[in-house]
Image (cartoon, rainbow, N blue to C red; front, side, top):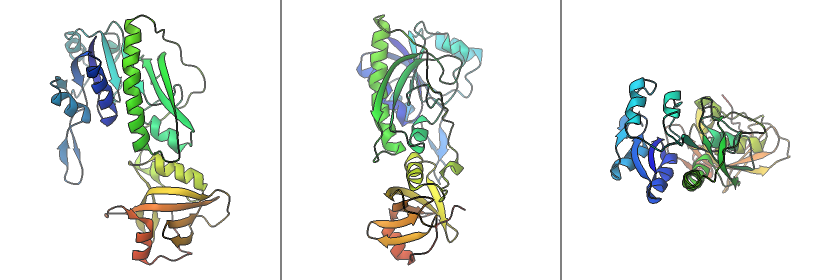
Length: 310
């Protein structure tokens, strides 16, 4: 099958690789422009572009995709289908209508839950016990098109947005290849989305702010849902502290929110609105990540000191 692939970050790479491994003719990869990243503001290529170039696939990085010339250029490749995996832009109607088999999106949630740009992060932040992958036929709405296939996975306490995202990327790759095979064979019928809808808007830096009046469980979910970006953060004596890893030490104890209850080799136990959160790994602003116990020893923290939200 002749495929044009739209995708940008690491999440898209397993799907692109799976298409090649399955013998599909990936004629073109469309990805976001190179971006400046890091403290050195170095120009960085999207992961999908790097993979495509290594495999001899032509790449374009349009600044605008709503111009008629863009759709006309894609039409010259005569794709059977367009596969879209975390591209990062709304696909215009002229492109959606271009391939005979439509535009197939690989989305990191069990639609219609968590439509939008950050489904993996919000599923974790909201304490979901399961999530998954949906392949769908794209329409003009935001992840509202008819569904093709779905696959579930359990969310465990060891999952964070990075690890869960990597697992879902592999699941999505397998589901995309299966979706195309079943569409080609005429055995897959799209079905409308139904059930409870929810949105997963892009995260902002302030989404990572820890409110110590929340329960320990909710703060734990925030920590893992915002890792690696924007990171769950709070303040200690005016210094910004990002929490990398944490666990719930107790879910019911009452204590002053943000108060350090005790310090041990396992980390720093901090009171929440209900329960106790154990900080295991933290990152002081401008420093490398370190075990919370080492930070406590180095700063000579004492029980009774407070982490603050601002």
